Length: 404
Ligand code: LLP
Image (cartoon, rainbow, N blue to C red; front, side, top):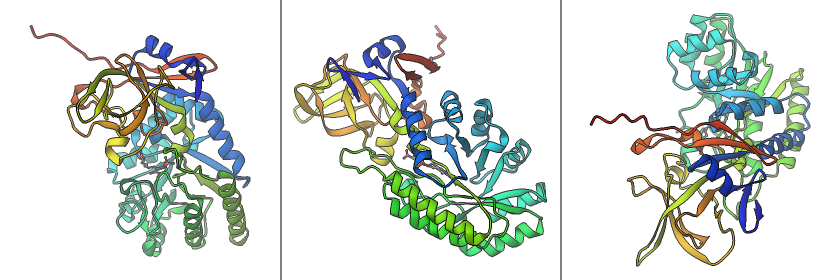
Protein backbone atom coordinates (compact mmCIF):
# COMPACT_ATOMS: atom_id res chain seq x y z
CA UNK A 1 0.00 0.00 0.00
CA UNK A 2 1.46 3.36 -1.01
CA UNK A 3 0.85 6.13 1.51
CA UNK A 4 2.11 9.72 1.31
CA UNK A 5 1.13 12.55 3.65
CA UNK A 6 -1.20 10.08 5.35
CA UNK A 7 -3.20 9.66 2.12
CA UNK A 8 -3.58 6.55 -0.01
CA UNK A 9 -2.01 6.42 -3.47
CA UNK A 10 -2.86 3.91 -6.18
CA UNK A 11 -0.53 3.39 -9.13
CA UNK A 12 1.35 6.52 -8.07
CA UNK A 13 -1.76 8.72 -8.01
CA UNK A 14 -3.49 10.10 -4.93
CA UNK A 15 -6.75 8.20 -4.47
CA UNK A 16 -8.52 11.50 -3.74
CA UNK A 17 -7.42 12.87 -7.13
CA UNK A 18 -8.77 9.77 -8.89
CA UNK A 19 -12.06 10.17 -7.05
CA UNK A 20 -12.24 13.84 -7.99
CA UNK A 21 -11.57 13.15 -11.65
CA UNK A 22 -13.66 10.00 -12.16
CA UNK A 23 -16.18 10.18 -9.32
CA UNK A 24 -17.11 7.43 -6.88
CA UNK A 25 -17.82 4.59 -6.54
CA UNK A 26 -14.83 3.72 -8.69
CA UNK A 27 -12.92 0.54 -9.42
CA UNK A 28 -9.19 1.18 -9.71
CA UNK A 29 -6.85 -1.53 -11.04
CA UNK A 30 -3.06 -1.31 -10.73
CA UNK A 31 -1.41 -2.60 -13.89
CA UNK A 32 1.94 -3.27 -12.22
CA UNK A 33 0.35 -5.64 -9.70
CA UNK A 34 -1.28 -7.71 -12.46
CA UNK A 35 2.00 -7.89 -14.39
CA UNK A 36 3.91 -8.83 -11.24
CA UNK A 37 1.44 -11.57 -10.27
CA UNK A 38 1.56 -13.08 -13.74
CA UNK A 39 5.36 -13.04 -13.85
CA UNK A 40 5.63 -14.48 -10.35
CA UNK A 41 3.26 -17.32 -11.21
CA UNK A 42 5.07 -18.31 -14.38
CA UNK A 43 8.48 -18.06 -12.74
CA UNK A 44 7.38 -20.28 -9.87
CA UNK A 45 6.49 -23.19 -12.14
CA UNK A 46 9.60 -24.55 -13.87
CA UNK A 47 7.77 -27.16 -16.01
CA UNK A 48 8.52 -25.90 -19.55
CA UNK A 49 5.24 -26.70 -21.33
CA UNK A 50 3.08 -24.52 -19.11
CA UNK A 51 -0.01 -22.68 -20.35
CA UNK A 52 -1.88 -20.18 -18.19
CA UNK A 53 -5.51 -19.66 -19.14
CA UNK A 54 -6.72 -16.60 -17.24
CA UNK A 55 -10.24 -17.26 -15.89
CA UNK A 56 -12.05 -14.30 -17.44
CA UNK A 57 -14.94 -14.58 -14.99
CA UNK A 58 -12.80 -13.01 -12.26
CA UNK A 59 -12.61 -9.72 -14.15
CA UNK A 60 -13.70 -9.59 -17.76
CA UNK A 61 -12.96 -5.96 -18.51
CA UNK A 62 -11.59 -6.13 -22.05
CA UNK A 63 -8.58 -3.96 -21.14
CA UNK A 64 -7.68 -6.34 -18.31
CA UNK A 65 -7.98 -9.23 -20.78
CA UNK A 66 -5.72 -7.34 -23.23
CA UNK A 67 -3.18 -6.72 -20.49
CA UNK A 68 -3.06 -10.38 -19.51
CA UNK A 69 -2.80 -11.43 -23.15
CA UNK A 70 0.16 -9.09 -23.46
CA UNK A 71 1.69 -10.76 -20.39
CA UNK A 72 1.46 -14.12 -22.18
CA UNK A 73 -1.80 -15.55 -20.84
CA UNK A 74 -4.44 -17.52 -22.74
CA UNK A 75 -8.11 -17.32 -21.78
CA UNK A 76 -10.56 -19.55 -19.95
CA UNK A 77 -14.20 -18.73 -20.67
CA UNK A 78 -17.59 -19.97 -19.49
CA UNK A 79 -20.13 -18.24 -21.71
CA UNK A 80 -20.70 -16.99 -25.22
CA UNK A 81 -20.24 -13.46 -23.86
CA UNK A 82 -16.84 -14.28 -22.40
CA UNK A 83 -15.72 -15.87 -25.67
CA UNK A 84 -16.72 -12.68 -27.51
CA UNK A 85 -14.84 -10.53 -24.98
CA UNK A 86 -11.74 -12.73 -25.27
CA UNK A 87 -11.84 -12.46 -29.08
CA UNK A 88 -12.31 -8.69 -28.77
CA UNK A 89 -9.24 -8.58 -26.53
CA UNK A 90 -7.24 -10.21 -29.32
CA UNK A 91 -7.00 -13.83 -28.18
CA UNK A 92 -6.98 -16.30 -31.08
CA UNK A 93 -9.63 -19.04 -30.87
CA UNK A 94 -6.90 -21.61 -30.23
CA UNK A 95 -5.87 -19.65 -27.12
CA UNK A 96 -9.37 -19.86 -25.67
CA UNK A 97 -10.72 -22.71 -23.60
CA UNK A 98 -14.44 -22.90 -23.01
CA UNK A 99 -15.76 -24.80 -20.00
CA UNK A 100 -19.49 -25.34 -20.20
CA UNK A 101 -22.09 -25.70 -17.51
CA UNK A 102 -25.66 -26.67 -18.48
CA UNK A 103 -25.53 -25.04 -21.89
CA UNK A 104 -28.14 -24.94 -24.62
CA UNK A 105 -27.67 -26.62 -28.01
CA UNK A 106 -27.51 -23.12 -29.57
CA UNK A 107 -24.58 -22.17 -27.33
CA UNK A 108 -22.89 -25.49 -28.04
CA UNK A 109 -23.25 -24.79 -31.76
CA UNK A 110 -21.77 -21.31 -31.34
CA UNK A 111 -18.81 -22.66 -29.36
CA UNK A 112 -18.10 -25.39 -31.91
CA UNK A 113 -18.21 -22.87 -34.75
CA UNK A 114 -15.99 -20.38 -32.95
CA UNK A 115 -13.09 -22.84 -32.97
CA UNK A 116 -12.22 -22.57 -29.28
CA UNK A 117 -11.25 -25.66 -27.29
CA UNK A 118 -14.32 -27.22 -25.78
CA UNK A 119 -14.21 -28.57 -22.24
CA UNK A 120 -17.32 -30.73 -21.76
CA UNK A 121 -18.97 -31.09 -18.39
CA UNK A 122 -21.48 -33.94 -18.83
CA UNK A 123 -22.16 -37.16 -20.72
CA UNK A 124 -25.11 -35.46 -22.41
CA UNK A 125 -22.85 -32.67 -23.69
CA UNK A 126 -20.46 -35.30 -25.04
CA UNK A 127 -23.32 -36.93 -26.95
CA UNK A 128 -24.66 -33.60 -28.25
CA UNK A 129 -21.19 -32.48 -29.27
CA UNK A 130 -20.67 -35.83 -31.02
CA UNK A 131 -23.96 -35.45 -32.88
CA UNK A 132 -23.24 -31.87 -33.95
CA UNK A 133 -19.60 -32.40 -34.86
CA UNK A 134 -18.42 -36.01 -34.90
CA UNK A 135 -14.68 -36.42 -35.14
CA UNK A 136 -13.88 -33.34 -32.98
CA UNK A 137 -11.06 -33.04 -30.47
CA UNK A 138 -12.39 -32.13 -27.05
CA UNK A 139 -11.49 -31.92 -23.40
CA UNK A 140 -13.55 -33.30 -20.52
CA UNK A 141 -14.05 -31.94 -17.04
CA UNK A 142 -14.04 -34.61 -14.36
CA UNK A 143 -15.22 -34.56 -10.79
CA UNK A 144 -12.80 -36.57 -8.73
CA UNK A 145 -14.67 -36.12 -5.45
CA UNK A 146 -12.14 -33.56 -4.18
CA UNK A 147 -13.31 -30.05 -3.37
CA UNK A 148 -11.91 -27.04 -1.51
CA UNK A 149 -12.46 -23.33 -1.17
CA UNK A 150 -13.23 -20.38 1.09
CA UNK A 151 -17.01 -20.98 1.19
CA UNK A 152 -19.50 -23.76 0.36
CA UNK A 153 -20.64 -21.76 -2.69
CA UNK A 154 -17.23 -21.99 -4.34
CA UNK A 155 -16.39 -25.67 -3.75
CA UNK A 156 -16.67 -27.27 -7.15
CA UNK A 157 -15.59 -30.86 -6.57
CA UNK A 158 -17.29 -33.62 -4.61
CA UNK A 159 -20.62 -35.43 -4.70
CA UNK A 160 -22.70 -32.29 -4.05
CA UNK A 161 -21.10 -30.29 -6.83
CA UNK A 162 -22.95 -29.82 -10.13
CA UNK A 163 -19.66 -29.77 -12.04
CA UNK A 164 -17.86 -32.34 -14.10
CA UNK A 165 -18.31 -35.93 -15.21
CA UNK A 166 -18.02 -38.14 -12.16
CA UNK A 167 -14.81 -40.10 -12.33
CA UNK A 168 -16.84 -43.31 -11.87
CA UNK A 169 -18.37 -42.59 -15.29
CA UNK A 170 -15.08 -42.25 -17.15
CA UNK A 171 -15.51 -45.50 -19.10
CA UNK A 172 -18.98 -44.39 -20.22
CA UNK A 173 -17.50 -41.05 -21.34
CA UNK A 174 -14.82 -42.90 -23.29
CA UNK A 175 -17.34 -45.11 -25.05
CA UNK A 176 -19.52 -42.11 -26.02
CA UNK A 177 -16.40 -40.41 -27.36
CA UNK A 178 -15.55 -43.53 -29.34
CA UNK A 179 -19.09 -43.79 -30.72
CA UNK A 180 -18.79 -40.26 -32.20
CA UNK A 181 -15.06 -40.45 -33.00
CA UNK A 182 -14.34 -37.67 -30.49
CA UNK A 183 -10.70 -37.52 -29.41
CA UNK A 184 -10.25 -36.62 -25.76
CA UNK A 185 -7.18 -34.40 -25.95
CA UNK A 186 -7.62 -32.71 -22.59
CA UNK A 187 -8.69 -33.55 -19.08
CA UNK A 188 -9.73 -30.86 -16.61
CA UNK A 189 -10.72 -30.34 -13.02
CA UNK A 190 -11.32 -27.29 -10.87
CA UNK A 191 -11.78 -28.10 -7.20
CA UNK A 192 -12.79 -24.68 -5.91
CA UNK A 193 -11.68 -21.14 -5.26
CA UNK A 194 -9.33 -19.28 -2.93
CA UNK A 195 -7.34 -22.29 -1.79
CA UNK A 196 -4.44 -21.25 0.43
CA UNK A 197 -3.07 -24.70 1.18
CA UNK A 198 -0.78 -25.96 -1.56
CA UNK A 199 -1.05 -29.53 -0.17
CA UNK A 200 -4.72 -29.72 -1.23
CA UNK A 201 -3.85 -28.51 -4.71
CA UNK A 202 -1.14 -31.15 -5.00
CA UNK A 203 -3.41 -33.90 -3.70
CA UNK A 204 -6.03 -32.95 -6.32
CA UNK A 205 -3.35 -32.94 -9.03
CA UNK A 206 -2.28 -36.45 -8.12
CA UNK A 207 -5.87 -37.68 -8.31
CA UNK A 208 -6.36 -36.07 -11.73
CA UNK A 209 -3.13 -37.56 -13.07
CA UNK A 210 -4.27 -41.05 -11.99
CA UNK A 211 -7.36 -40.51 -14.17
CA UNK A 212 -5.36 -38.92 -16.99
CA UNK A 213 -3.33 -42.12 -17.25
CA UNK A 214 -6.51 -43.84 -18.48
CA UNK A 215 -6.90 -41.53 -21.50
CA UNK A 216 -4.41 -42.40 -24.27
CA UNK A 217 -4.66 -39.33 -26.58
CA UNK A 218 -4.09 -36.41 -24.21
CA UNK A 219 -2.31 -33.22 -25.23
CA UNK A 220 -2.95 -31.28 -22.02
CA UNK A 221 -3.97 -31.72 -18.41
CA UNK A 222 -5.81 -28.74 -16.91
CA UNK A 223 -5.67 -28.43 -13.13
CA UNK A 224 -8.10 -25.50 -13.01
CA UNK A 225 -7.78 -22.36 -10.93
CA UNK A 226 -8.27 -21.82 -7.23
CA UNK A 227 -4.95 -20.25 -6.19
CA UNK A 228 -5.87 -18.10 -3.23
CA UNK A 229 -4.73 -14.73 -1.93
CA UNK A 230 -4.60 -13.52 1.68
CA UNK A 231 -7.64 -11.35 2.41
CA UNK A 232 -7.54 -11.33 6.22
CA UNK A 233 -4.53 -9.92 8.05
CA UNK A 234 -3.77 -13.39 9.47
CA UNK A 235 -4.21 -15.34 6.20
CA UNK A 236 -1.00 -16.95 5.06
CA UNK A 237 0.20 -16.37 1.51
CA UNK A 238 0.22 -19.42 -0.74
CA UNK A 239 3.74 -20.78 -1.06
CA UNK A 240 3.77 -20.51 -4.83
CA UNK A 241 7.39 -21.53 -5.19
CA UNK A 242 6.89 -24.76 -3.22
CA UNK A 243 3.67 -25.45 -5.14
CA UNK A 244 5.34 -24.78 -8.49
CA UNK A 245 8.31 -27.03 -7.74
CA UNK A 246 6.19 -29.90 -6.55
CA UNK A 247 3.59 -29.59 -9.30
CA UNK A 248 6.32 -29.50 -11.97
CA UNK A 249 8.13 -32.56 -10.59
CA UNK A 250 4.86 -34.45 -10.35
CA UNK A 251 3.81 -33.55 -13.86
CA UNK A 252 7.20 -34.27 -15.42
CA UNK A 253 7.23 -37.73 -13.78
CA UNK A 254 3.71 -38.35 -15.06
CA UNK A 255 4.69 -37.36 -18.61
CA UNK A 256 7.66 -39.72 -18.52
CA UNK A 257 5.43 -42.67 -17.68
CA UNK A 258 2.74 -41.48 -20.13
CA UNK A 259 5.39 -41.38 -22.85
CA UNK A 260 4.68 -37.85 -24.09
CA UNK A 261 5.47 -34.34 -22.92
CA UNK A 262 2.00 -32.93 -22.28
CA UNK A 263 1.03 -29.31 -21.64
CA UNK A 264 0.28 -28.34 -18.07
CA UNK A 265 -2.64 -25.91 -17.90
CA UNK A 266 -3.64 -23.72 -14.95
CA UNK A 267 -6.66 -21.41 -14.91
CA UNK A 268 -6.09 -18.78 -12.24
CA UNK A 269 -8.53 -15.91 -11.98
CA UNK A 270 -8.37 -14.38 -8.52
CA UNK A 271 -4.62 -14.82 -8.11
CA UNK A 272 -3.84 -12.56 -11.06
CA UNK A 273 -6.26 -9.70 -10.48
CA UNK A 274 -7.69 -9.64 -6.94
CA UNK A 275 -4.88 -7.72 -5.26
CA UNK A 276 -4.67 -5.25 -8.14
CA UNK A 277 -8.17 -3.89 -7.56
CA UNK A 278 -9.57 -1.32 -5.14
CA UNK A 279 -13.12 -0.08 -4.85
CA UNK A 280 -13.13 3.58 -3.89
CA UNK A 281 -16.29 4.93 -2.27
CA UNK A 282 -17.24 8.18 -0.57
CA UNK A 283 -18.52 8.32 2.99
CA UNK A 284 -21.98 9.82 2.64
CA UNK A 285 -23.32 9.38 6.15
CA UNK A 286 -21.81 8.74 9.57
CA UNK A 287 -24.48 7.56 11.97
CA UNK A 288 -23.32 7.38 15.59
CA UNK A 289 -26.25 5.52 17.11
CA UNK A 290 -26.28 4.56 20.82
CA UNK A 291 -25.18 1.02 19.84
CA UNK A 292 -22.91 1.31 16.84
CA UNK A 293 -21.22 3.70 14.49
CA UNK A 294 -22.37 3.14 10.92
CA UNK A 295 -20.15 4.50 8.19
CA UNK A 296 -22.40 4.72 5.14
CA UNK A 297 -20.89 4.85 1.66
CA UNK A 298 -22.09 5.50 -1.88
CA UNK A 299 -21.73 1.86 -2.96
CA UNK A 300 -23.34 -1.42 -1.97
CA UNK A 301 -23.36 -5.14 -2.60
CA UNK A 302 -24.54 -4.34 -6.09
CA UNK A 303 -20.89 -3.34 -6.71
CA UNK A 304 -19.05 -5.82 -4.49
CA UNK A 305 -21.17 -8.74 -3.37
CA UNK A 306 -18.45 -10.87 -1.78
CA UNK A 307 -18.98 -9.72 1.85
CA UNK A 308 -22.78 -10.13 1.62
CA UNK A 309 -22.68 -13.38 -0.35
CA UNK A 310 -19.84 -15.27 1.29
CA UNK A 311 -19.18 -13.28 4.46
CA UNK A 312 -15.89 -12.45 2.73
CA UNK A 313 -13.37 -10.14 4.40
CA UNK A 314 -11.91 -7.22 2.44
CA UNK A 315 -9.40 -4.87 4.06
CA UNK A 316 -10.77 -1.32 4.23
CA UNK A 317 -8.70 1.83 4.59
CA UNK A 318 -9.72 5.42 5.10
CA UNK A 319 -7.86 6.77 2.07
CA UNK A 320 -8.27 10.36 3.26
CA UNK A 321 -6.59 9.68 6.62
CA UNK A 322 -4.74 6.39 6.66
CA UNK A 323 -3.53 6.76 10.23
CA UNK A 324 -5.01 8.64 13.17
CA UNK A 325 -7.51 8.25 15.94
CA UNK A 326 -9.30 4.94 15.47
CA UNK A 327 -12.89 3.86 15.84
CA UNK A 328 -14.73 0.51 15.57
CA UNK A 329 -17.43 0.81 12.93
CA UNK A 330 -19.83 -1.01 10.64
CA UNK A 331 -19.23 -0.07 7.02
CA UNK A 332 -22.60 -0.16 5.28
CA UNK A 333 -23.76 0.35 1.71
CA UNK A 334 -26.59 2.40 0.24
CA UNK A 335 -28.99 -0.41 -0.72
CA UNK A 336 -32.32 -1.04 0.96
CA UNK A 337 -31.29 -4.33 2.44
CA UNK A 338 -30.02 -5.06 5.96
CA UNK A 339 -27.31 -7.38 4.67
CA UNK A 340 -25.76 -4.57 2.65
CA UNK A 341 -22.71 -4.39 4.88
CA UNK A 342 -19.05 -4.46 3.82
CA UNK A 343 -17.59 -4.98 7.30
CA UNK A 344 -18.73 -5.23 10.90
CA UNK A 345 -16.69 -4.34 13.99
CA UNK A 346 -13.92 -2.99 11.81
CA UNK A 347 -11.30 -0.64 13.17
CA UNK A 348 -10.85 2.37 10.88
CA UNK A 349 -9.40 5.80 11.38
CA UNK A 350 -12.26 8.01 12.44
CA UNK A 351 -14.44 8.78 9.43
CA UNK A 352 -16.10 12.00 8.44
CA UNK A 353 -18.64 12.55 5.73
CA UNK A 354 -16.78 13.24 2.50
CA UNK A 355 -13.89 10.91 3.36
CA UNK A 356 -12.83 8.36 0.80
CA UNK A 357 -12.82 4.68 1.74
CA UNK A 358 -10.72 2.15 -0.15
CA UNK A 359 -11.98 -1.43 -0.17
CA UNK A 360 -8.93 -3.48 -1.06
CA UNK A 361 -8.36 -6.78 -2.89
CA UNK A 362 -11.48 -6.14 -4.94
CA UNK A 363 -10.06 -6.82 -8.41
CA UNK A 364 -11.52 -10.34 -8.70
CA UNK A 365 -15.24 -11.11 -8.61
CA UNK A 366 -15.94 -7.44 -7.83
CA UNK A 367 -17.21 -5.57 -10.86
CA UNK A 368 -17.63 -8.97 -12.56
CA UNK A 369 -20.44 -9.85 -10.11
CA UNK A 370 -21.99 -6.37 -9.98
CA UNK A 371 -25.65 -5.75 -10.67
CA UNK A 372 -28.22 -2.99 -10.99
CA UNK A 373 -30.05 -3.93 -7.79
CA UNK A 374 -32.16 -1.05 -6.47
CA UNK A 375 -31.86 0.40 -10.00
CA UNK A 376 -28.44 1.79 -9.16
CA UNK A 377 -25.89 2.23 -11.94
CA UNK A 378 -22.57 0.37 -12.03
CA UNK A 379 -19.32 2.20 -11.24
CA UNK A 380 -16.59 3.29 -13.63
CA UNK A 381 -13.35 1.29 -13.92
CA UNK A 382 -9.88 2.72 -14.41
CA UNK A 383 -6.46 1.17 -14.95
CA UNK A 384 -3.53 2.99 -13.34
CA UNK A 385 0.19 2.70 -13.80
CA UNK A 386 3.20 4.91 -13.08
CA UNK A 387 1.12 7.97 -12.28
CA UNK A 388 -1.22 7.66 -15.28
CA UNK A 389 -4.87 6.63 -15.29
CA UNK A 390 -7.00 5.30 -18.13
CA UNK A 391 -10.74 5.03 -18.08
CA UNK A 392 -11.46 1.43 -19.11
CA UNK A 393 -15.21 1.47 -18.52
CA UNK A 394 -17.31 4.58 -18.20
CA UNK A 395 -19.70 4.97 -15.30
CA UNK A 396 -23.19 3.74 -16.09
CA UNK A 397 -25.64 6.63 -16.25
CA UNK A 398 -29.31 6.61 -15.43
CA UNK A 399 -31.33 7.12 -18.55
CA UNK A 400 -33.89 9.54 -17.39
CA UNK A 401 -36.67 11.12 -19.31
CA UNK A 402 -39.21 12.69 -17.06
CA UNK A 403 -42.83 11.73 -17.75
CA UNK A 404 -43.91 15.15 -16.43
N1 LLP B 1 -11.66 -22.46 -13.73
C1 LLP B 1 -12.96 -22.76 -13.51
C2 LLP B 1 -13.59 -23.84 -14.25
C3 LLP B 1 -13.70 -22.03 -12.57
O1 LLP B 1 -14.97 -22.33 -12.34
C4 LLP B 1 -13.07 -20.97 -11.86
C5 LLP B 1 -13.81 -20.18 -10.88
C6 LLP B 1 -11.72 -20.68 -12.14
C7 LLP B 1 -11.05 -21.46 -13.08
C8 LLP B 1 -10.96 -19.58 -11.47
O2 LLP B 1 -10.92 -19.73 -10.11
P1 LLP B 1 -9.98 -18.77 -9.23
O3 LLP B 1 -8.55 -18.99 -9.67
O4 LLP B 1 -10.42 -17.38 -9.47
O5 LLP B 1 -10.23 -19.23 -7.85
N2 LLP B 1 -17.23 -15.58 -6.92
C9 LLP B 1 -16.40 -16.36 -6.04
C10 LLP B 1 -15.44 -17.25 -6.80
C11 LLP B 1 -16.14 -18.17 -7.77
C12 LLP B 1 -15.18 -18.95 -8.63
C13 LLP B 1 -15.90 -19.62 -9.74
N3 LLP B 1 -15.05 -20.38 -10.60
C14 LLP B 1 -15.66 -15.40 -5.09
O6 LLP B 1 -15.83 -14.20 -5.20
O7 LLP B 1 -14.95 -15.85 -4.20
